[in-house]
Picture 1 (cartoon, rainbow, N blue to C red):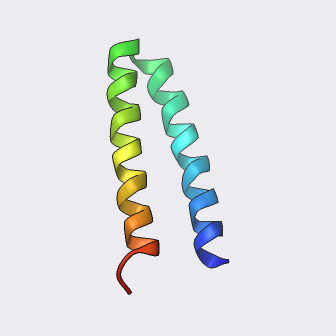
Picture 2 (cartoon, one colour):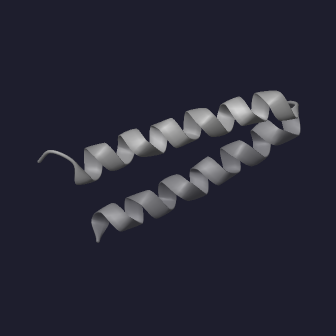
Length: 52
């Protein structure tokens, strides 16, 4: 349950960061932000649900 709460908080923060990034930059840079966030999410899920 703790992991689910952590992921929910992370997604909320990531959404906020993406909103700010989109406001400050163009679409191409926004796509780079999305790619970085996706890679980070994969890494976080690996840490939470991966090797104990």
